Image 1 (cartoon, rainbow over the protein chains, first blue to last red):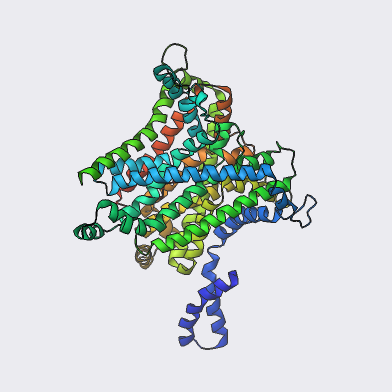
Image 2 (tube, chains in turn blue, cyan; image 1 turned 180 degrees about the horizontal axis):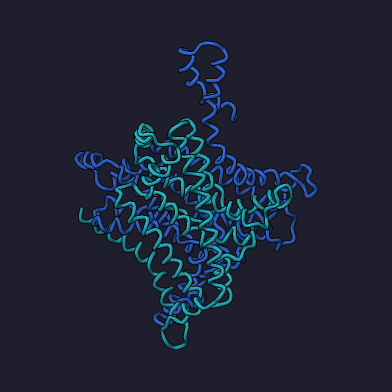
Length: 312
Length: 262
């Protein structure tokens, strides 16, 4: 494949030099001249190959190998055991819930600061803050939520002393599904704001004016114009949020101490050798994750292409 | 019209509450280090802990190496592509954005599997950690550098410099890099902010870095973790606020800031 690209890159060079320098020998050198610039990419490509492509493909290869190294499909059969299917299910549930809640709130906030008629200064403030908050993840984020909604967290205690509400008696637990969902949503909302705000800005004022002058209500405008135009960008953003939560390890690790059964935590446990399973099951788990991520990225790219028709 | 603005205020307020309630609660919580009074005792405990400085220093060192290697790989390649092989741009785009699709947990797993035995037994060398961090920071560095390059007339500048007799060295260091200053600074701060608190690679490759240190504190202490969270937030805020300020003055579109190492 690399050779194909190199030759394609060389073609115009050859065309240009053939005219003023005939003869097979010179033509050969011109070809070389076309290829040589690609050599400048070698350090980067070599690094990316060694530390990104090789590791990623080793996961794929490993999931088709048995402990002794021979080809097998048994690892995928192991994926179908109830406990592993269960952990995929809860990971998908957490990712979908945070993508949906974060996506909805993020969209509404992005709407408010872009076309919602709020002062410009609030827009700058919110987009700067989103840049910070979307990177405020991992261990510190988990700590912030423990300090807020943990068993002795400030809000938990406040609810108890002010309103007599026992949060943890009502079934809430920061270290399980809803706790994880609330915590992830903290970085999902700002990410959604950053992704979708440009699309909202790109919607033409004329569309709204035209539909209003034809007697459409605000609701009708969104139903018939706004949402259809934004739909590909919205779906693409939701997929990105989904993938973002699906691969998250650090936040869940710090929040639950590795006790919740989501897929990244299981993979981590396999790597650290905390669980008495075979390593190849770990590869299969990771491979399942690679598949989910690949599908997400493909869908994302496709939707992005669709949305670029309307919103630039 | 009026209703739309009222609703906008509502959504905005919900956002503010969601963003700032946990921060405010964490800050108040962190002040409870000494029983009965509000104090900065938890912060003092953090700073006097020798492990804090040791792990933070280690992570800072790794982060600086990551920035140097990452910039050395991306900047010359991006310039080279724009000048010599524009055809390679799509390939370069894919390679630099691919790390977004590979969660750190998968990257860590793959790195351990690939480099734990000869010929390249790197698993106990910091080389592997830095290499992983460089991969993770590819998208951030690339997006800053790319927007920086797009904002200037690279070809025109190079032709002008070469017609005045500049070689490749002075072209790079005296013409192109000074023009990329803002982009390089954004890339640097963003990478520092992400790498210093990184947990996944550090924990799985078993390094005494700042991320694992924080996680350990979370298990053993009550108020110090809250103090650490506030300090980390201040660090992230400082880095990214600085980037935003820098890029705003350049009237640039700003670097891609989003999606850290979760």
